[in-house]
Image (cartoon, rainbow, N blue to C red; front, side):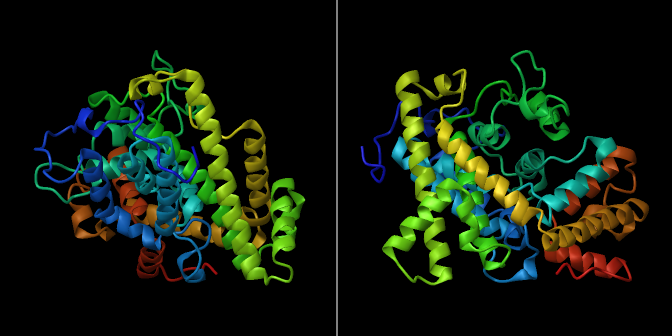
Length: 402
């Protein structure tokens, strides 16, 4: 089958008509499947709108053409839907998970996450996946009958487990949580609504995870080129990008740097999508899953890069780490951003009356971890811009973050 063609619905796809349902029962929609309804709820959520002013690497006023969490999420959704269509799984569920995967990120990207994790070190720490779960299960206040968005079990599972199982079958932490333990927000929620943390997530969730990696790599290259942190020819140090650049130069001799970089990004995305599709097709043919249950209980993930492409992707991440994420200019801004988050957290701890009215209610009676978590939830929901505005309101001096 051509990679560009839509596959017929596969037996291993999540079937919206057989969803495990919502924690709070609701009458079905007459016009939308449960997964389409989930996707629409994510799009209309306050947390999703805030992604417009949350950055990944650069702060919001760095320029109008750099990615924000919102544009990144839309690009992830486009890549994820393309793969879902080719593999015959549910596009609506895949899109839901692609659009929801960054809902728990605080302001200032990974710098903000590091700072909040440090501030909440004695209170269970901060994990953006756990925070995304909090957002969609309690922090959104849009419906009269429940907190959160009341998403289907499949959407909640995908938000939590898109990167793989969190525990062993006996409940012991596994994978990336082996040393730190399961994030408190996920562990607490799972006690009352079992998301089967020991199993793999659906193919739809696995696809969303790889779409995230593809979008990150390609678009961080694009942003790094725009920012002048490196040039197109600097990417020749990696065999894959060197080969793509050579092919571009053969077809378009004398092409200007902007178009040259854009063509590199486009070809890189196509290369990775094709690689994931081919490897997933091979694994699915070998495993022969006949249901979404079979996918979850398979002993390995069924969406992956081939080994040689995994090495190519790791090389790109290593390049970006050295040339972009650890660039002196970026490190300076991110260090100042971490300080902004720490300052805000300490101020709200000492003076909870400085919180907005809707967040003050209850905080006066709370002490210790409960109050700290409330403060963490408030800061995590901030945009970069609002965090700076709050810092200017509460402190005499605020860094420019430029």
